[in-house]
Length: 237
Ligand code: NDP
Image (cartoon, rainbow, N blue to C red):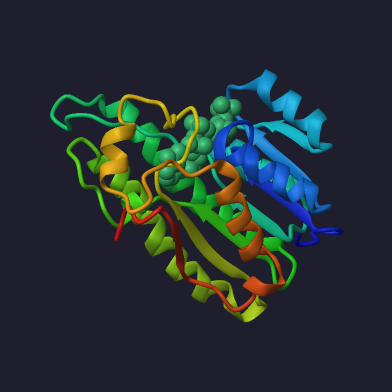
């Protein structure tokens, strides 16, 4: 297991799902881990006491709150931007405010959090944004806005990798395919349809995504930057 002892780690959006698996993985590796949440206070507090981590209430859609939270953590070694939301449906009837909130959380927040973190990040730090295979492929109707947010992450990651590379800081995206969580339950109504697009016909587990994050954040990930690391069971193949 990668050793994160002595590392100052912040996970944005860590109370549930993939984010909670990431918190558990980095805490198990001995890192000093703080994570944010917006609505799930009970889940966040339970996870914090289970893992010996710190839960911070901060809405990623609130730029001032987000920036203050990142700044307050001081010199970070690892930042993982996981918080995301999914709004799907006919673009002709989709609620415009919900789409804008998704853009705030999935695009604006990763950008501002990454830049703020980099301002005082230690050399050889790691910035990881959880994107989605839907940034590459959206093989069903109703996903245009979500796919747009995850494609935006790709451009951001490529650019920031060049901006911060001279300090040894790497910037990458992890692009999961269907992964069991509240957002996308393995036994949900869309599961069979999603599996039909995959070579491996099952949802991933959050732990599998977290393990990839730990590889990228560890010493063996030092030469990987500006990249999209897809972990999707062949959804995009
Ligand atoms: P969940 O909905 O299960 O969990 C989302 C997490 O993000 C929760 O901890 C939630 O905290 C937090 N969060 C959401 N909005 C905010 C906000 N405004 N401020 C702070 N925290 C917030 O989602 P998943 O675990 O499934 O998804 C995690 C990431 O992975 C997302 O970026 C998603 O787009 C991406 N992804 C997921 C896939 C899947 O199949 N599950 C596939 C591909 C990508 P709280 O409840 O406290 O608000």
